[in-house]
Image (tube, rainbow, N blue to C red; front, top):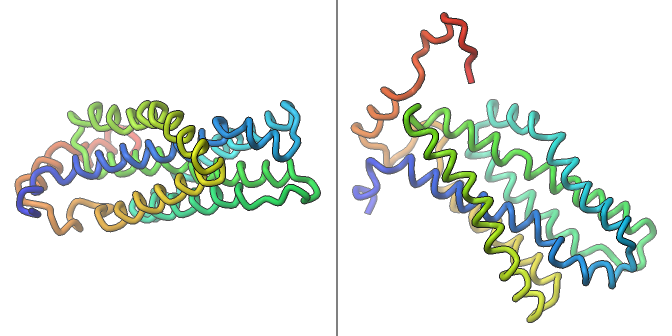
Length: 227
């Protein structure tokens, strides 16, 4: 089995990031589909719901650059793994907010903001993986596949979340989203390595393809900034 994977390890990792990207979209958008039930249960106005939705986007925007910094320092394997656990925690926390709590909107805003901050690391970390694993002439295809996960998530999320909500309530749909995140994150941690040289499935031929296709270190002398 492992022998059959040699020569394609880099694409296995890219495909798995595509899957993680789809699950990230699931965690991001499930609240939009469940909003009718949440508004009714917590007696929220449309303006309050808007604050809750915006909190995610704010966290997502503010933590893109820090997410890239973390990926540079700790590598995409650990950063994406921790991120999937983070998503699961804050997706689940949204279901545990009591109806009677004081400042329920502020609590929802805080939970969604922190979820957005955790999701912000996804694409900076995937770019770090691409920089280490994918030859220059394959990066368009690799990044296209990664970002296709957003479209796949957008297509899967509405029917999946709706089906679960109709049969088990909106909280169950969030729990399923969290569980999927933990599953794909666990597989990612087992599957991924930060550098091709560290991967036990890496063959000599694929290693040569990767090395020969990466930007030459002499590019720095030409004034080209490192990644």
